[in-house]
Length: 270
Ligand code: NI
Image (cartoon, rainbow, N blue to C red; front, side):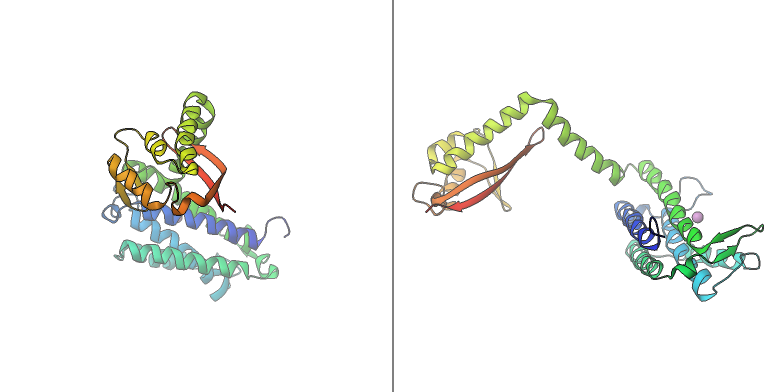
């Protein structure tokens, strides 16, 4: 099992569960009772259902260590799972359940010996599957229900986090590459501001600000030219100030449509 084994399965299940939990966090608690149709599981029921399937694995492959599902009482297991899904739980309790059951499942799978993983289990109908293949099915089961949850998010007016992340990354990329005019302007504006800062020229620093500029610094807000000037003076950018002896080297410059991010390295002048 060098190519894909219990280590890889546990690792990818960690990613799957992490995303399930992010969805669970994004959906407000007031919507946990929401179900898209009267016959569908609610948000809470779906999440609990996901969490309990990993518990069922330990029952099947460890506690009972079954070699056949044919005689196994699935009815009882399903009843138990349904009872758990209906038991009221808070959002926090459900997320904790997903986290602890997920961690436990991954650690357990990672530690299972290959001999146990390759044991064949008779399926209803007569075919056989290895325990490893059955455990893969648990991850597939979670992804199936997680896909339902992303549609539920849309129905509730929530943009799923994977789409949000992609949009954020795409937005940054397009404005940096497709709009040289705007990126050059932003870069120049940043230069007009940081060059006088490096030179300790307070008047030129002030000239780099728009008239209605607002400076935010570690949660403090300076919203008038005198306040911005005083802030720069206090911070020590002016001639003879604490920061006037600091030389700054720009290490990286990136921007979106309305933001420039400068990574800078400060060195004390000799
Ligand atoms: Ni299911």
